[in-house]
Image (tube, rainbow, N blue to C red):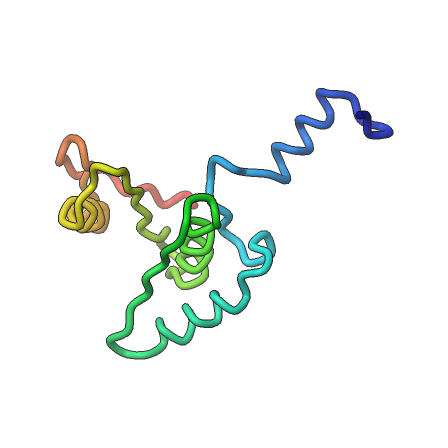
Length: 119
């Protein structure tokens, strides 16, 4: 199957821009069909003492939904803290990763990293 006006190299370049399966989506414009969930996250984050828990099957867009919400509610001078999990992670290890990132420590070396302000 061919697409008029596209050779293989040009199609690959266009796909790199349009698709990012290896990285979560970070903007509402690129997150399609999740407006209701973003609104629920907004309501939860605006209410004192409420939290957000995103769950679901693999590949349904949990990371993209979380990253989009995180980037919407970040302060202008900071990136949100985003940590990944693996099947071997525990609740404690994930919380430790979040705390280490918040304090500027590298997870693997426990050495405080330099803050990078060019965002």
